[in-house]
Image (cartoon, rainbow, N blue to C red; front, side):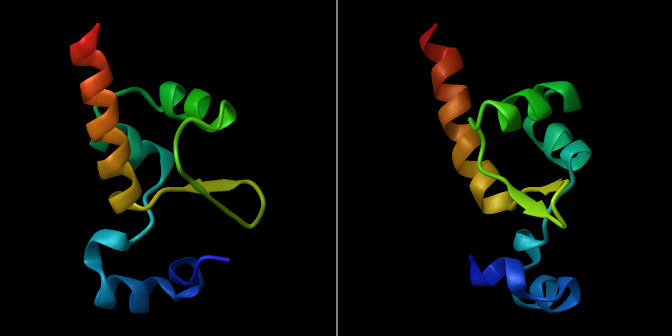
Length: 78
């Protein structure tokens, strides 16, 4: 399991503020899409995510930055 996910939220935020896990709504806002799009990408395993307590979905901002860069490049190529 990823060690970053094992850190307590306050400890994680203190060590890496950009690595505080984001909710679906926060990730959607960051990516400029609807929460429904984010849920669809999670279901299709197209976006890196973490499962917390089985059902809750969280995202690391560093993973979203990489995803957003590839997403923007894909949109520009169309």
